[in-house]
Length: 148
Image 1 (cartoon, rainbow, N blue to C red):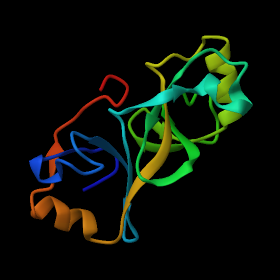
Image 2 (image 1 turned 180 degrees about the vertical axis):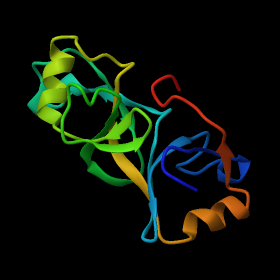
Image 3 (image 1 turned 90 degrees about the vertical axis):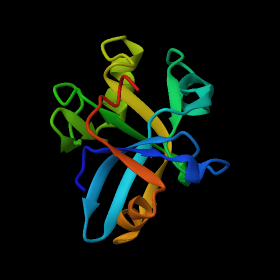
């Protein structure tokens, strides 16, 4: 496993939080793995959150069951958003969220450039490998997290 891979839940996870989930793995090391569900829209939009009430409606996604009090984001615009951590190729995790919101507000950044997520998915060391081995997750070859 490595950052930048996608995993998709199998029928073993039906009737759980992860039913039909596609997860983009953003971190994988000796401490475990971290990723975000990228195919489940959250019912509210960014402008429905009090501190962002003056920005245009922009979709939010349910990133995972852990730390749903915080927003996370992945993007492919390091030319505009500094401070992000490269995950794989042109995809970055986090960075200057104030800049990201400014570029969303002036329509420089679109849904094809960024995905804003509530919460994340996390695994302890070797936990994800065990879940894949037992058949809960299928590793996908490739994908674009902004088109799923």
